Length: 67
Image 1 (tube, rainbow, N blue to C red):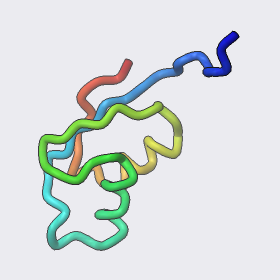
Image 2: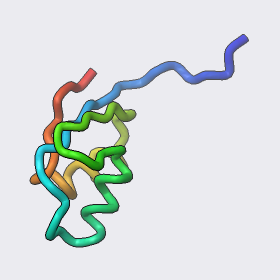
Image 3: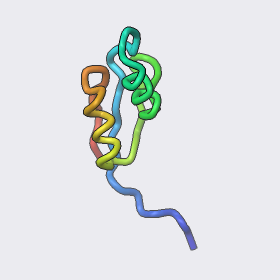
Image 4: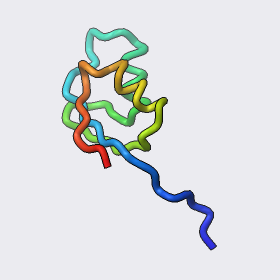
């Protein structure tokens, strides 16, 4: 018997911009998304919280895949 939940939707984001000369909260949001260098990708669960984080730094990331 498995305790894991059924996989929900995921979203893959790629960092396209530098966090240099950005407010500290935007840098922290990138780290929260699992990003810290340009062209890094991170696959996350598609939740309202993650969507809000993506929206906050939309000028520094792009959504690559929505599965």
